[in-house]
Image 1 (tube, rainbow, N blue to C red):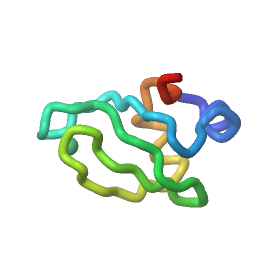
Image 2 (image 1 turned 30 degrees about the vertical axis):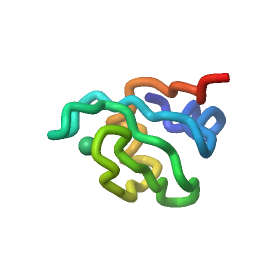
Image 3 (image 1 turned 135 degrees about the vertical axis):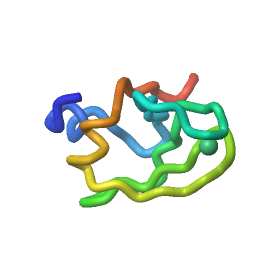
Image 4 (image 1 turned 90 degrees about the vertical axis):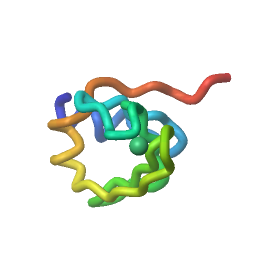
Amino acid sequence: MNPRTLHTQLRVGDRARLKKTHPCGSRDWEVLRLGTEVKLRCVGCGHLVSLPRAKLATVLKEIVPPAG
Ligand SMILES: [Zn+2]
């Protein structure tokens, strides 16, 4: 995904769907915090990671807004 798209569209509470599947079977990560690094929690297993924005842009497939 274009880093600019990520910068303008990603919001706390969104789900970031990545290209690679986590070992737990989930591809969706909840966005907990945005900054130079983006903090994510795996929806499947609760694993926490921090990724630099530029790195996230390379692995992000789509942004899924929270339901409702
Ligand atoms: Zn997981």
